[in-house]
Length: 227
Image (cartoon, rainbow, N blue to C red):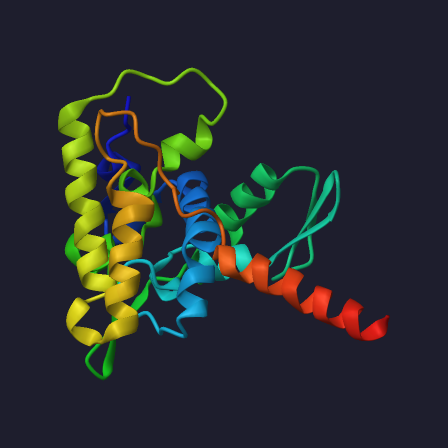
């Protein structure tokens, strides 16, 4: 069944120290889904996602750390901060947690001022991409190829509501034609599949189909003139 996305992140405060518990693995999957199934379409529209949108790169607590990973070889991962190497990515992740936790993306913009995101649960909530995994179908991506679990109507309804909230906040239809088109696209790509009718997510694919077609047309034109 669906994993409750809120369980992926918990913020505890003990003796003045703030501990962030946000699933790095699920956040990574959410980021991968955004990059593969949304970003190409947003770029095609030349649309700038607001930082208030939870899909914005600045709202990923692990973004800076993930950008400081280097996969050198099949059994070699390097930390971009201190250049230490590891056999597996999970060991590098643990290293980040132990040695570079101060470099987590914990700052958010509030008007003209930067405030610490761990001042309150509400302010930190948007920094954990794992929290929106339900809306983005992370479990579908993780379990692709395996036997489909029984659909939970209540979970599907919750995830659809979260998904529609993302569409409204990230692509407000009042912000013009591009935002309106992306709003409709987001509903088709992610939200409509949150049902127990058997519909699948990512129905619009990984990239605009016109991109591939136009590339073939350009190649054909070049070949024609070359003959």
